[in-house]
Length: 348
Image 1 (cartoon, rainbow, N blue to C red):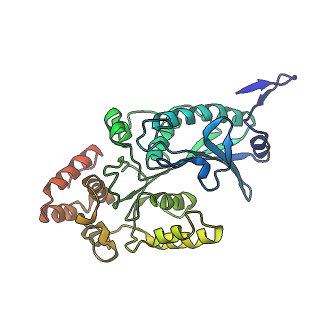
Image 2: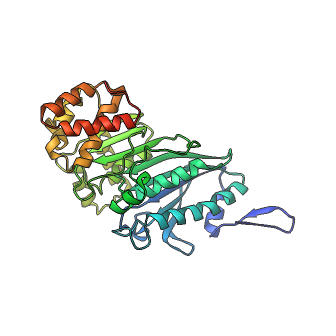
């Protein structure tokens, strides 16, 4: 991690001169860690940069925007079935190994460090694991955790059985957990991954009808923006406009194209409130893909209605209960009630 010079002073050691030179030019370093979804290699991720030392599945890049210095790490996603490496377990271990080495060395340079973590699909599980780990250790006064963004986190059937914590992020047993700005994006339109990991104690929750793969772009937009307050949001895209925009630029937009996409996202990510609440869960107008029968799985229905029922201290529970029971979905309401009790929310 470090060595001593001839004068006895402790010197930081880094994996490349490029990183060392980059860090020397600033007092504050942002570290962004991006955990990709299943079968997504870091080497092909836009802007990933170059391989990090001998870590074949980890890439890094040094970004400078104005006086903002950001060291970005991109981790390849797990294999499709999460059996062969890299998998959730091995990526988590590798990330800990890299950060255990990197953070003390940056600290030796007397730098302030802010760590931001993002993750999509199974990468969302890794992101949450690393965030919990960093929250449980003493990082020192010069280091703090920034946003945690997870897009449609999915543990998979094996991980759900082996480690229930991977399937329910709201079960926090660590007393030293440090709250932070946490964002989660869920789609109601994914059939392959029927039961995503629950993270309903997040500060910002967004439900959308875009595909599982496109949820990461909504999460990234919120990650890069400081305009969204804590709350429950919806992003309705009944005509698949976001997919068309990203497909037209091969998922790698230029800066100008990204500005156009961000403008669209800003217009379509709207807060859920008493005005649109009933239209949303009844599937009216542009919200038609959010209607009960259009939501792709019971696991996602349960998550969606639980989020709506906990919103604004549960003041819409009666409406949601009447809607579900009135349409012969009593079992779903029972599941929602059970989840609300686990979340510590009073049943109205």
